[in-house]
Amino acid sequence: MFKYIKKFEQVVSTVLIVLMSFVVVLAIADLIWLLIKDAITPPILLLDTGELLEIFSMFLLVLIGVELIETLKAYVQHSKIRAEVIIHVAIIALGRKIIGLDLKEVSYESMIGIAAMIVSLTLASYMIHRSKNNLPDDSLPVKKDGEVIP
Image (cartoon, rainbow, N blue to C red; front, side, top):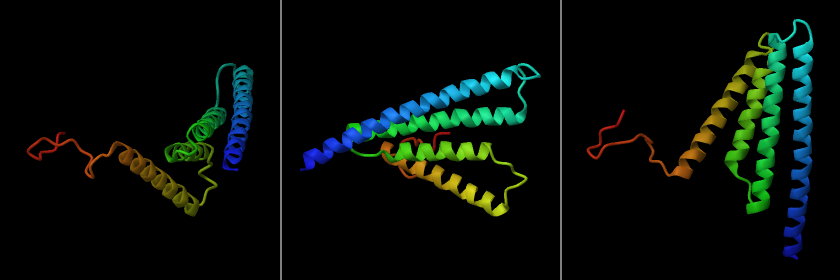
């Protein structure tokens, strides 16, 4: 029974990888179209700030798709989801949100919430990295006599 469930999970994950790959290809095509459209509209080859932010946001959207494919691929290969990949996807998504943010229309409560998310995700990423590398608590290189190496 469990053999069939495992096979079903692999089939579903593989279908999701194919679909996500298709979505990433469409996002890349959309990004190319956006670049061409913005480059040929007057003034030619000059982009204003809004156009640049939209292009950067699309780049990050493609990166999110690639990271999600990586997560699905890791799930198919190892039957587990790697936390660091999820954290990286969240960081990229938050960066994308920040790039598109109109600071004049955002409340200070929202800004505090975004800052808290940045700190939380950064701390989570650091803790995962530290636990994977088995770094000591101070994580600074130290000489034999206990002196910290600058």
